[in-house]
Structures are given as C-alpha cells and as structure tokens.
Image 1 (cartoon, rainbow, N blue to C red):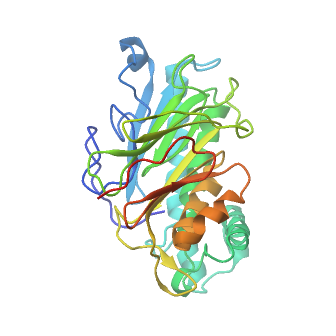
Image 2 (cartoon, helix red, strand yellow):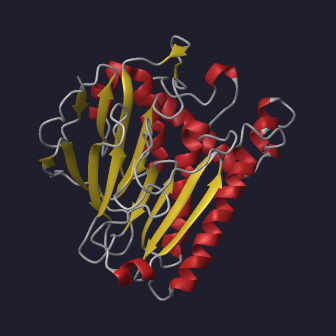
Length: 329
C-alpha cells in the first residue's frame, strides 16, 4: 500500500507512460469496468465515485440491480466503504507519525493497545511470509510496514461492505488492484485490462470474470478459458481479484528480503484469484522472487499469474490460456 504524498490521478483515457495499473476501455479510474458497449441507461444507473487517499486513487463502480435498495442505498454503501478506507489509513499508515502502526513500530505501544484489526493484519502477514518462504515480509528494512498486504485487505473489506448493502455488482479499484463482485451487466462479465509495463498505451493482458449471481465469491474456476487477439491474453475466471506488482510506477521499490537489494528479473507480475488480501500480498512476494515466482505460483491453490520479464519476454501459469504475447524487441 502506498501511503506517501498524494499523487495526481491519471486522466480517464489511457495509461500514461510506464503506468502499470489496471484500466479498462472507458477509463482507468473514474469508471473502472466501464465498457464501450455500455448503454446510456447502464451508465446513468451506475453509481461511481473516486477518492484520493493512501497516496493513490480509489474508485468505485457499482452496477444495478441494487438488491432491495436503490442507487441512493448504493451511494450510502459507497460512503461507508470510503469511511472504512480512511480509517485503515489512519491506523496503518507508516507516513502518519501518530498512526497505531507507527507508534507500535517505535515501541510506544504494544499490540494490545491497538485496534483488533492490527493483530488480524499482522497475523495474515505472518501467514503469507510463511507461504512465500520469507519473500513477503511485514518488516522490510527492519521497520514495521504491513503495507504490502493492507491495501488489498482493505479493498476486499470495502467490497464486502457493498455486498452486505445489496450492491452485489461492483468493482473496487485501489491504485490498479481490484476486487470485483457480480457482473458488469446482466450476462456480461467484468473485463480488467493490465497496462503493459514496457509499451506505453498498450495492454499486456485482459482478464475476464464474474462472480456468482448472489454476489458471493464462488470457488475458482477449475478450467480457465479464453482467447488471444492483438497480442493479448484473455482469461476467464470466477470470483475475481486482480493485483499487479512492478517497477513501472514507483521504480525498484520492492526489495528481495534475502539480499536486501531491489528485486530483479521481472518488470511486472499480475496475479488473479478470489481474495485481494492474498492476491495483492502474493504479487509482492512473486515479484521479489523474480524467476522463481512461476513455480511458486503454480503451487498455490486458486491463483494464476502472468509476468513480463526484464528482457520483455512473458510467462504465464497454466491457467492463463493461449500463446504468450510477443516479446518486446
């Protein structure tokens, strides 16, 4: 999670040079999930909202029907989700000297003095660290910083807030990491595009998926299917969370904890699964692993990966079908 100074949002047209974040036709932030085929009625009925916080852009795209409520009820749910994200920033930001995580890191307070969410997050960090063989850590450089897990966890929780309110068709996007529920429209899945880290204005891959009709995350698809066109790998899954880690936006900010040096070998890796809490943290670990990431991800249940290497080549786990896009020359 980036919690530094606020960075201006990207215009809702196409990814800027080097922008790795997820975007779809129709806009990367203002209308995540928007599609050129959306009817005027669908566009007007949707509830959309953009917030700048945690040093990045969060966007909400809530599609009808809204269960027992209406667009007003959906808007109230979005407001509740935004309030939740602001509280997460207040508790976990490493850039706020008075946050619970900052005070805990300095030894001014103990875990028992923190909100229960802190213990929950730190427990999840320990579990991911064990699963990733230490490539994920909540103490990069020796300082307490669970940011690599917090953003995905917070977004997933925000998605649950919307679902509980009856807004079962939605996309929550935080700096390019997304948790989706339901469908973009009746009979039409969500489509998530991932910007190519080495080709300005181009997509590296497109992931297509939808949730169960009730808006509850279902099991991962046993066989992902898709097609390839224009150099894009098109993937279909059920129950969708997508997270990307790479160097395009923030440079070499992910450190290999085993060497203490910036991770090398990959320029981006995108993971797909059900839970953004895990997918986001796993993406950080996979990027730190470099060339070892592919074998590791293949051993995870319900997670698939697509990566672009430093040389411009690509690889994918078996769940990403079809031939890989052409290498950059």
